[in-house]
Image (cartoon, rainbow, N blue to C red):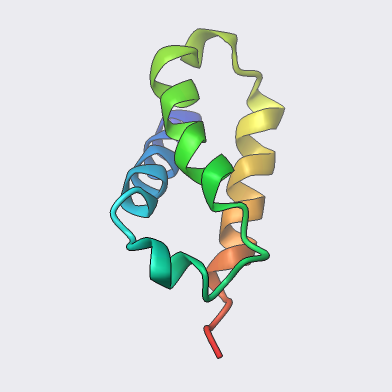
Length: 71
């Protein structure tokens, strides 16, 4: 159940990134925006092939980015 909640949250983050204007994405070039945007498709369409440890690593990576602030 927790995995499904985390997976849903990752999909939400991925979709939200698709709506951030490119000029704002350029303010944080070290964040892998393309990968974050793309993971939503993988989670939606290849969910049956994703191992639990991949979901946990993704959630750790995303939560590590959430504390960042733009300069």
